[in-house]
Image 1 (cartoon, rainbow, N blue to C red):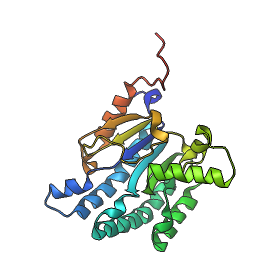
Image 2 (image 1 turned 90 degrees about the horizontal axis):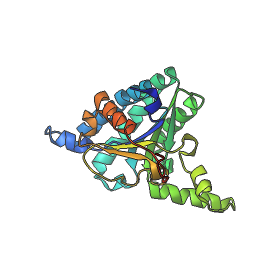
Image 3 (image 1 turned 135 degrees about the horizontal axis):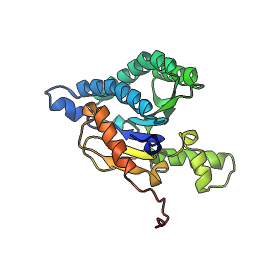
Image 4 (image 1 turned 60 degrees about the horizontal axis):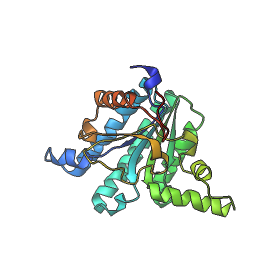
Length: 231
Protein backbone atom coordinates (compact mmCIF):
# COMPACT_ATOMS: atom_id res chain seq x y z
CA UNK A 1 0.00 0.00 0.00
CA UNK A 2 1.44 3.39 -1.04
CA UNK A 3 2.26 5.55 1.98
CA UNK A 4 1.33 8.66 -0.01
CA UNK A 5 -2.26 7.42 -0.13
CA UNK A 6 -2.58 6.60 3.56
CA UNK A 7 -4.96 9.05 5.28
CA UNK A 8 -3.34 10.98 8.11
CA UNK A 9 -6.49 11.18 10.23
CA UNK A 10 -9.17 8.47 10.28
CA UNK A 11 -12.41 8.57 12.25
CA UNK A 12 -14.34 5.37 13.01
CA UNK A 13 -17.96 5.03 14.09
CA UNK A 14 -17.71 1.64 15.76
CA UNK A 15 -21.23 0.30 15.29
CA UNK A 16 -22.70 -3.17 15.58
CA UNK A 17 -21.50 -4.57 18.93
CA UNK A 18 -25.00 -5.27 20.25
CA UNK A 19 -26.25 -6.89 17.05
CA UNK A 20 -23.07 -8.99 16.85
CA UNK A 21 -23.81 -10.38 20.31
CA UNK A 22 -27.51 -11.00 19.68
CA UNK A 23 -26.68 -12.96 16.52
CA UNK A 24 -24.68 -15.27 18.80
CA UNK A 25 -27.44 -15.59 21.38
CA UNK A 26 -25.57 -13.43 23.86
CA UNK A 27 -26.37 -10.21 25.72
CA UNK A 28 -25.38 -6.90 24.16
CA UNK A 29 -22.69 -6.49 26.81
CA UNK A 30 -20.89 -9.49 25.32
CA UNK A 31 -20.64 -7.59 22.04
CA UNK A 32 -19.33 -4.47 23.75
CA UNK A 33 -16.55 -6.51 25.34
CA UNK A 34 -15.66 -7.98 21.95
CA UNK A 35 -15.77 -4.52 20.40
CA UNK A 36 -13.46 -3.11 23.07
CA UNK A 37 -10.96 -5.90 22.44
CA UNK A 38 -11.06 -5.08 18.73
CA UNK A 39 -10.02 -1.48 19.40
CA UNK A 40 -6.53 -2.61 20.39
CA UNK A 41 -6.12 -4.72 17.26
CA UNK A 42 -7.33 -2.04 14.84
CA UNK A 43 -5.39 0.72 16.59
CA UNK A 44 -2.15 -1.23 16.33
CA UNK A 45 -2.71 -1.94 12.64
CA UNK A 46 -3.71 1.66 11.86
CA UNK A 47 -0.47 3.09 13.21
CA UNK A 48 1.57 0.43 11.42
CA UNK A 49 -0.02 1.61 8.18
CA UNK A 50 1.09 5.17 8.88
CA UNK A 51 -2.14 6.72 10.12
CA UNK A 52 -1.27 9.50 12.57
CA UNK A 53 -4.60 10.14 14.31
CA UNK A 54 -7.40 7.66 14.94
CA UNK A 55 -10.64 9.20 16.22
CA UNK A 56 -12.97 6.61 17.73
CA UNK A 57 -16.64 7.14 18.55
CA UNK A 58 -16.82 5.23 21.83
CA UNK A 59 -19.85 6.71 23.61
CA UNK A 60 -22.15 9.36 22.19
CA UNK A 61 -24.10 11.97 24.12
CA UNK A 62 -27.24 10.12 22.94
CA UNK A 63 -26.10 6.75 24.32
CA UNK A 64 -27.30 7.69 27.81
CA UNK A 65 -30.80 6.82 26.57
CA UNK A 66 -29.86 3.14 26.39
CA UNK A 67 -30.88 0.74 29.20
CA UNK A 68 -29.04 1.50 32.46
CA UNK A 69 -27.56 -2.01 32.58
CA UNK A 70 -25.94 -1.50 29.18
CA UNK A 71 -24.66 1.99 30.03
CA UNK A 72 -23.16 0.73 33.30
CA UNK A 73 -21.39 -2.07 31.44
CA UNK A 74 -20.00 0.41 28.91
CA UNK A 75 -18.64 2.59 31.72
CA UNK A 76 -16.95 -0.43 33.32
CA UNK A 77 -15.42 -1.37 30.00
CA UNK A 78 -14.06 2.14 29.57
CA UNK A 79 -12.41 1.98 32.98
CA UNK A 80 -10.84 -1.36 32.08
CA UNK A 81 -9.74 -0.14 28.64
CA UNK A 82 -7.93 2.94 29.89
CA UNK A 83 -6.15 1.08 32.71
CA UNK A 84 -5.25 -1.98 30.63
CA UNK A 85 -3.86 -0.24 27.57
CA UNK A 86 -2.10 2.69 29.23
CA UNK A 87 1.20 0.82 29.62
CA UNK A 88 1.03 -0.43 26.03
CA UNK A 89 0.23 3.05 24.73
CA UNK A 90 3.10 4.59 26.72
CA UNK A 91 5.53 1.94 25.46
CA UNK A 92 4.60 2.63 21.85
CA UNK A 93 4.74 6.43 22.39
CA UNK A 94 1.10 6.91 21.46
CA UNK A 95 -0.98 9.75 22.80
CA UNK A 96 -4.49 9.43 24.23
CA UNK A 97 -6.89 12.33 23.84
CA UNK A 98 -10.56 12.49 24.79
CA UNK A 99 -13.13 14.68 23.06
CA UNK A 100 -16.51 15.29 24.64
CA UNK A 101 -17.98 16.46 27.93
CA UNK A 102 -16.39 14.14 30.48
CA UNK A 103 -17.64 16.19 33.45
CA UNK A 104 -20.77 14.01 33.74
CA UNK A 105 -18.78 10.77 34.02
CA UNK A 106 -18.07 9.22 37.40
CA UNK A 107 -15.26 10.73 39.47
CA UNK A 108 -13.39 7.41 39.23
CA UNK A 109 -13.58 7.28 35.44
CA UNK A 110 -12.65 10.96 35.13
CA UNK A 111 -9.54 10.32 37.22
CA UNK A 112 -8.53 7.35 35.06
CA UNK A 113 -9.09 9.33 31.86
CA UNK A 114 -7.20 12.37 33.12
CA UNK A 115 -4.24 10.20 34.06
CA UNK A 116 -4.18 8.58 30.60
CA UNK A 117 -4.39 11.95 28.84
CA UNK A 118 -1.74 13.66 30.99
CA UNK A 119 0.67 10.70 31.05
CA UNK A 120 0.72 10.39 27.25
CA UNK A 121 0.48 14.08 26.29
CA UNK A 122 4.10 14.33 25.07
CA UNK A 123 3.96 11.13 22.99
CA UNK A 124 4.21 11.85 19.27
CA UNK A 125 4.06 8.58 17.30
CA UNK A 126 0.27 8.70 16.93
CA UNK A 127 -2.93 9.88 18.58
CA UNK A 128 -5.88 7.80 19.78
CA UNK A 129 -8.65 10.42 19.99
CA UNK A 130 -11.62 8.93 21.84
CA UNK A 131 -15.13 10.41 21.72
CA UNK A 132 -16.76 10.05 25.17
CA UNK A 133 -20.11 11.65 25.89
CA UNK A 134 -19.45 13.21 22.52
CA UNK A 135 -21.79 14.77 19.97
CA UNK A 136 -20.92 16.80 16.89
CA UNK A 137 -23.69 19.37 17.41
CA UNK A 138 -22.76 19.82 21.05
CA UNK A 139 -19.13 20.28 20.02
CA UNK A 140 -20.06 23.16 17.71
CA UNK A 141 -22.09 24.79 20.51
CA UNK A 142 -19.10 24.33 22.84
CA UNK A 143 -16.76 26.05 20.38
CA UNK A 144 -19.15 28.96 19.73
CA UNK A 145 -19.77 29.54 23.45
CA UNK A 146 -16.02 29.51 24.05
CA UNK A 147 -15.55 32.20 21.39
CA UNK A 148 -18.39 34.30 22.82
CA UNK A 149 -16.90 34.05 26.30
CA UNK A 150 -13.55 35.23 24.94
CA UNK A 151 -15.29 37.98 22.93
CA UNK A 152 -13.92 36.62 19.67
CA UNK A 153 -15.51 36.76 16.23
CA UNK A 154 -17.56 33.77 15.08
CA UNK A 155 -15.83 32.61 11.91
CA UNK A 156 -15.31 29.26 10.20
CA UNK A 157 -11.63 29.33 11.15
CA UNK A 158 -12.24 30.34 14.77
CA UNK A 159 -14.82 27.61 15.28
CA UNK A 160 -12.42 25.06 13.77
CA UNK A 161 -9.67 26.15 16.13
CA UNK A 162 -11.87 25.69 19.21
CA UNK A 163 -13.28 22.23 18.60
CA UNK A 164 -12.35 19.39 20.94
CA UNK A 165 -9.97 17.85 18.40
CA UNK A 166 -8.70 21.09 16.83
CA UNK A 167 -5.00 20.30 17.17
CA UNK A 168 -5.35 17.02 15.24
CA UNK A 169 -6.96 18.48 12.13
CA UNK A 170 -9.91 17.22 10.15
CA UNK A 171 -10.41 13.51 9.41
CA UNK A 172 -9.46 12.55 5.86
CA UNK A 173 -11.61 9.44 6.10
CA UNK A 174 -14.59 8.50 8.27
CA UNK A 175 -15.48 4.82 8.46
CA UNK A 176 -18.77 3.48 9.78
CA UNK A 177 -19.22 -0.21 10.49
CA UNK A 178 -22.50 -2.06 11.06
CA UNK A 179 -24.44 -1.26 7.89
CA UNK A 180 -25.98 2.12 8.76
CA UNK A 181 -25.35 4.93 6.29
CA UNK A 182 -25.24 8.07 8.44
CA UNK A 183 -22.81 9.99 10.64
CA UNK A 184 -24.95 9.91 13.80
CA UNK A 185 -23.63 13.23 15.11
CA UNK A 186 -19.94 12.31 14.70
CA UNK A 187 -17.44 15.05 13.82
CA UNK A 188 -20.00 17.00 11.80
CA UNK A 189 -17.97 20.18 11.51
CA UNK A 190 -14.61 18.56 10.87
CA UNK A 191 -16.07 16.01 8.47
CA UNK A 192 -17.36 18.52 5.91
CA UNK A 193 -14.91 17.22 3.29
CA UNK A 194 -14.01 13.85 4.76
CA UNK A 195 -14.29 10.83 2.53
CA UNK A 196 -16.95 8.46 3.86
CA UNK A 197 -16.76 4.67 3.89
CA UNK A 198 -19.66 2.49 5.01
CA UNK A 199 -19.52 -1.27 5.52
CA UNK A 200 -22.03 -3.90 6.64
CA UNK A 201 -19.33 -5.59 8.74
CA UNK A 202 -20.16 -5.34 12.44
CA UNK A 203 -17.46 -3.71 14.55
CA UNK A 204 -16.19 -6.85 16.37
CA UNK A 205 -15.63 -8.46 12.93
CA UNK A 206 -13.93 -5.38 11.44
CA UNK A 207 -10.39 -6.76 11.29
CA UNK A 208 -7.11 -5.62 9.75
CA UNK A 209 -8.17 -6.75 6.26
CA UNK A 210 -11.37 -4.70 6.52
CA UNK A 211 -9.37 -1.62 7.50
CA UNK A 212 -7.08 -2.25 4.53
CA UNK A 213 -10.16 -2.36 2.27
CA UNK A 214 -11.34 0.99 3.61
CA UNK A 215 -7.91 2.55 3.08
CA UNK A 216 -7.74 1.09 -0.43
CA UNK A 217 -11.14 2.62 -1.25
CA UNK A 218 -9.90 5.96 0.09
CA UNK A 219 -6.79 5.79 -2.07
CA UNK A 220 -8.97 5.63 -5.20
CA UNK A 221 -10.96 8.76 -4.32
CA UNK A 222 -10.24 12.15 -5.94
CA UNK A 223 -10.46 14.80 -3.25
CA UNK A 224 -11.30 18.21 -4.77
CA UNK A 225 -12.59 20.06 -1.70
CA UNK A 226 -15.22 21.85 -3.79
CA UNK A 227 -12.79 22.81 -6.57
CA UNK A 228 -12.86 21.75 -10.21
CA UNK A 229 -10.41 18.99 -10.96
CA UNK A 230 -7.82 20.10 -13.49
CA UNK A 231 -7.53 18.00 -16.62
